[in-house]
Image (cartoon, rainbow, N blue to C red):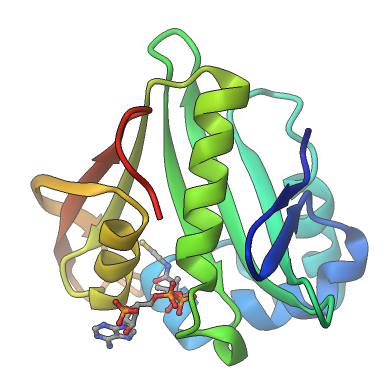
Length: 179
Ligand SMILES: CC(C)(COP(=O)(O)OP(=O)(O)OC[C@H]1O[C@@H](n2cnc3c(N)ncnc32)[C@H](O)[C@@H]1OP(=O)(O)O)[C@@H](O)C(=O)NCCC(=O)NCCS
């Protein structure tokens, strides 16, 4: 089952029709600062991003787009990546459309996809990392059941070559409470 539902969202694999929203998301300054994807200069690149994000066949990632249940507008992107089935671990990353921030989209995406990882893929740990300066992401992590585990020094290369940030490491295991 690759369609998840939360209180406010339907979370499903990316579709080419999401390209205009994906274009906006990938070019948002906060996304480019904290969680850059590929360079996205035009809609064709955004379409390719959506198409490739929907192809999970190499087994290393599972990427979804979240849409608002009522409006069907795309509100976010969430991805399990670095999936390692031998160790039963993965990492999680996320981005919320600028207009949809501050109303729980990220925490719902992270909680739902992490539950899917445990229940449907048998993973035993999902790890979440963010720059120590990304305070909103830290709030999302704690709210979605990812306890703080430590700080990795100089783990994040700030886009544009303007320095390096330390990163918080958060983790959630199957028995940990989520939202
Ligand atoms: C981080 C991000 C995903 C949060 O998305 P969101 O849907 O707004 O998240 P939620 O609404 O679930 O929660 C946001 C939390 O951050 C808090 N927050 C927002 N801006 C903040 C800031 N500047 N300082 C501190 N907390 C902040 C909100 O108050 C809320 O916490 P609370 O409900 O406990 O008060 C979104 O801002 C984003 O896409 N940023 C750019 C990409 C990014 O940083 N991705 C994560 C990389 S690790």
